[in-house]
Length: 228
Ligand SMILES: C[S@@+](CC[C@H](N)C(=O)[O-])C[C@H]1O[C@@H](n2cnc3c(N)ncnc32)[C@H](O)[C@@H]1O
Image 1: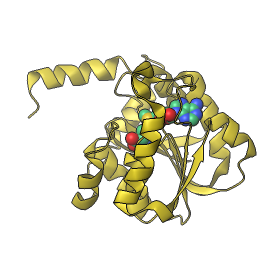
Image 2 (image 1 turned 90 degrees about the vertical axis):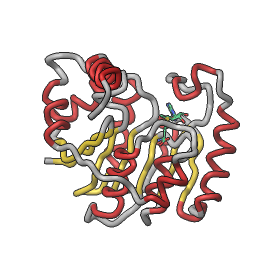
Image 3 (image 1 turned 90 degrees about the horizontal axis):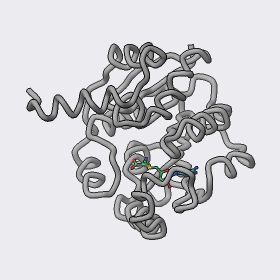
Image 4 (image 1 turned 180 degrees about the horizontal axis):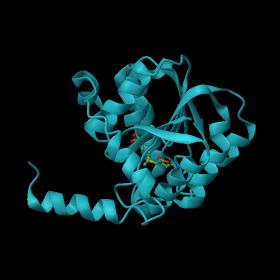
């Protein structure tokens, strides 16, 4: 049973992340599709020491997606930071295209605590972490703004993970551009929605429900969608 301060924190984070009533169908869909499973301990041990905010149950859902989603093909990951989610996908056997600016020039600098963390250091740690996890050959690195890279992109994917800019404009633009590369039957994952105080990303995720997507699974702030 969670302690009272933790429960209050959960309630505050949840209610500061979505706007009632617009996002309620997303919140209900995610609540009804909760998927509670942990990723294998050897993978969690590697990523637990890295910078980033992916939680155990979220890593579990990523592992489930990578190993159980029936469509073969690579992952496009928008927003890799130090590589927590990248390593889960790669260790689970998927090839990953990691797209990230690793730069303070992004509109949403929250990952770098608004400039207190060096983006170049994070990029160096990302490459080191891939080597340490033994997945260097499983990951192709694309350094730049998701918008710029998306304009020239031409490779399809089976799984798309959206975790780059968390403002409404960034998340909406990423979804508009990058879902076009998802193969029929592909899986879309969005991190930091519903929970954790990112109402912009939550709003963009919520709008997916009017665009032919349905929620199929969720764990904490990670939500998985498939086309209806
Ligand atoms: C929350 S972190 C990603 C966390 C990562 N998925 C993990 O599991 O730890 C967000 C990342 O998105 C990147 N980012 C933010 N806005 C971006 C943009 N417009 N284009 C490219 N990368 C962006 C940041 O550089 C940062 O590394």
